[in-house]
Image 1 (cartoon, helix red, strand yellow):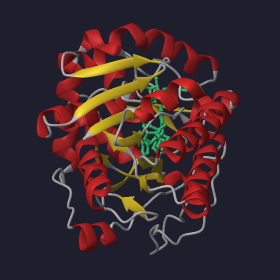
Image 2 (tube, protein in one colour; image 1 turned 180 degrees about the horizontal axis):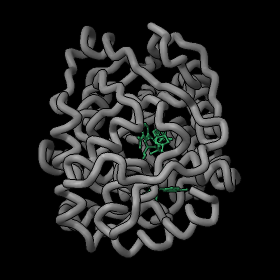
Image 3 (cartoon, helix red, strand yellow; image 1 turned 180 degrees about the vertical axis):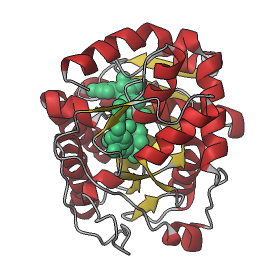
Amino acid sequence: MRLLVTGGAGFIGANFVHATVRDHPEDRVTVLDALTYAGSRESLAPVENDIRLVHGDITDRDLVVQLVGESDAVVHFAAETHVDNALAQPEPFLRTNVIGTFTVLEAVRSHGVRLHHVSTDEVYGELALDSPRRFTESTPYNPSSPYASTKAAADMLVRAWVRSYGVRATISNCSNNYGPYQHVEKFIPRQITNVLTGRRPKLYGSGANVRDWIHVDDHNNAVRRILTDGQIGRTYLIGAEGERDNLSVLRTILRLMGRDTDDFDHVTDRAGHDLRYAIDPSPLYDELLWAPKHTDLNEGLRETIDWYRANESWWAPMKDVVEAGYAERGQ
Ligand code: NAD
Ligand code: TDX
């Protein structure tokens, strides 16, 4: 398969490319990535001789049409992804997440190419902490943040292009990922690298907010399964039943790193901070016979801490800039 991977120099996309090169050497992979602050060539260094990396923007219509025309399938990861950045400056989220997805859709429409669109559980809004409910594919969209609303808009465009133009697309909405190559602006890598650089971890509000954690390799395995066996037009929710509140994730990190579990700061809470996300992944288990392999979050965190310890040269150049931005916002 000739695969075009948008956003393949970012966290999840790079891990997807690594797994594809490892598990499907018969595939030919092209990455299209704008190499924004969130993307890096270094994340693809281990596979640089096995893939083609095109430095370009998903809103560049001519480039996207050309690359899609050379592909059998597109896996669309490229997006602006950080909720705190969206709150501070939403415009790039509109451009990349909405116009960028529109551009990809028009290109797959003109060439009749298969598309898998990667999205998030944040489109569903928040659940109450004590609710027995979890998100399913029929949960109504109710996005809270500028980030989530642009991802919701993109999902709606994909659904409309399937129905109106017969585009062969699937959508997945996944829960919070963790693992190697995640940007240090995000919760887990931020706390690990704060400890590694002698800073104190920073918890928003009381830390009662719950996220449903999944290892990035499990997410990517599910994406691959949907790409090959998924039903066109369907939405699949991807999750690994890893609900945990932020305070307990932070305390686990501190414990695994040999620190006092109270050795952190409470900082200004995120505006509109969603309380809880939780995915019901049973259709993926029952219909596509998928199951996560990384089911022990503590073990996954231990491996992730080891990765950040061993790969300081990957994250250190971004760390001071990210922390300066957080400090300006009182976080
Ligand atoms: P990331 O921010 O680490 O990477 C995004 C990548 O997209 C970067 O390499 C960046 O350079 C690239 N990019 C941004 N704008 C672009 C543009 N205009 N043109 C081309 N490339 C551009 O993000 P991630 O965490 O790897 O997320 C990947 C996808 O998965 C996103 O669509 C996100 O919404 C979705 N998702 C993420 C999570 C999570 O927990 N991280 C969970 C569910 C879904
Ligand atoms: O320093 C921090 N302290 C803190 O308490 C940061 C950066 C975050 N948090 C909290 C906010 C959230 O409740 O931790 C939780 C996770 O925060 P993020 O890593 O920013 O993730 P989240 O907002 O949940 O969104 C992530 O998962 C869904 C990704 O960034 C999205 O791209 C994805 O769609």
